[in-house]
Amino acid sequence: VTLSGTAVKPEITVSPASLSFSANVGDTITKTFTVKGTGLTGNLTLTLNDGGTIYSIDKTAISWRVANSGATVTVTYSPTEGGTSNASVTISGGGADAKTVYLSGTAVKPEITTDVTSVAIDPTYTGYEGSRTILVTGTDLVGNIELSYKRDRTNSFALSKYTITPEEAAK
Image (cartoon, rainbow, N blue to C red):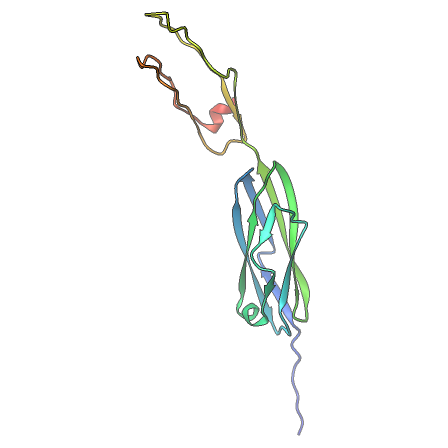
């Protein structure tokens, strides 16, 4: 009896091969990639490299059976300070060559500033009419600045504008 066959080289594929994150400091963003195996001879191990506390993954192992059908891995990006950070996830095992998913993240820390911290009006003045301009600026904003004020008993204060857009705050 003569037997013949073709050897199948175990293979790991990942999609996508890189993930890019953009967030505000303190935000948490998740993205996913898929791991698929062909002809694997054992389970796969996932290792997060240089992730520190900024990146995390939801799996550290995938069985060969699950990998044959395709497994989704969730990466969480939680920046604690502004700047860029890079890391990678290595997928190895199962008799296949290791694959790497590259992670890159950019975090900004939005800041709002004013030219005063409070505005005081002498309550003994009556019939006073006037205005006070307060300069409000912002950097790295991803949304509007909403303004409010605390009214006195006479409701004699008013704002001329209640919302400042990121574009207006950058001026």
